[in-house]
Length: 87
Image (tube, rainbow, N blue to C red; front, side, top):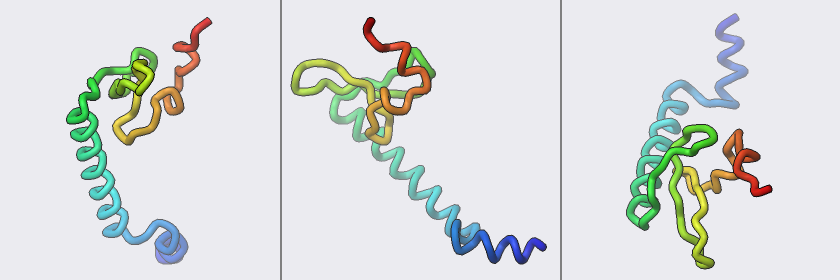
């Protein structure tokens, strides 16, 4: 049974070694992006809505916007983004 499951899963996910390599590449990339965000003057902080690590980046219009370490605007990924909407 396990061999059959392995035959079904490996073509989709890859072998354990391949999955581990992808994870390590992702971890390295995330570390590099985090360092880059800090290097460009992004201030590390914690989201008050979900406690995730975020970086504030000042846009050309002068306003600060929160971003995740992967460069995604945190308003998109925050599960509590509605908390921050202006009324």
